[in-house]
Image 1 (cartoon, rainbow, N blue to C red):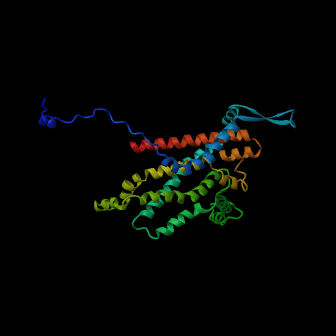
Image 2 (image 1 turned 90 degrees about the horizontal axis):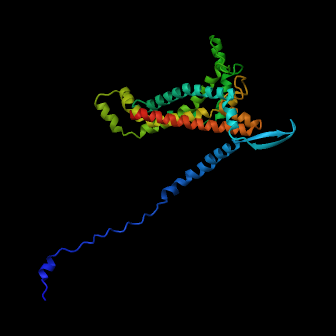
Image 3 (image 1 turned 90 degrees about the vertical axis):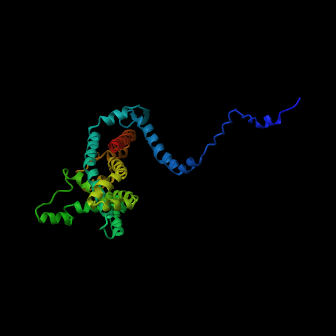
Length: 315
């Protein structure tokens, strides 16, 4: 028996049709390792305190045996939340800070945007000096800033009030009708420079070739700012808007300082001040319920703002 070696050599090799074994996936822990410096403080200083506050809000302190009886802590469920949501003073404080935010936040962000655009313009000089000058108010501690403005508001001490009185127009900055806007002036003075730096940093990330091309097409600086810079700044404006909403609902330092010199600021002037006053009077459970309610309201408003502005950007 003979073998045709030529035919055998010409025959194609038989391919192995068996599927290759799938490589075992190795889990990469590097991203989680690099995120630990954020997650550990976030868990310890945000999630744990909020969880403990929620636990405290489910309790209630009762006194047995009359006025001088022994205090006992019992489980009350959501009873504290019912009392908080039915408290007219707390609801009034929420309405007050909402009105404050509707007026103060747009004005502050508009001023911050204007300053950032002016610093980024081609005709601006001494940019480093003005960046530092605008940021200095944010570097001053909040209590010091509030005390400084309290001096300028006090009609017995303020040279500003004295000057306005001489020209026949001296508003009562510490009166009930002006107090909210006096606080708004302090907040705007403090945080405008901070927001301006965020917006200005976003402008610096834009390639200069875009502006040069627009100038070659005959666009003025005003058109470049309106049609190119402001649309590019939408993410930065959304970020500063969220920060401002959170800060407004946490308003505490300024009214607390002005409360010592004016009767217009009550113990429930803002939600944070109301929760602090309850905790100071040993009513920790209701203060915890108020704090948790405020935290949920902050989350809802911030998330709603992001969703609303995100849909506007897509359209």
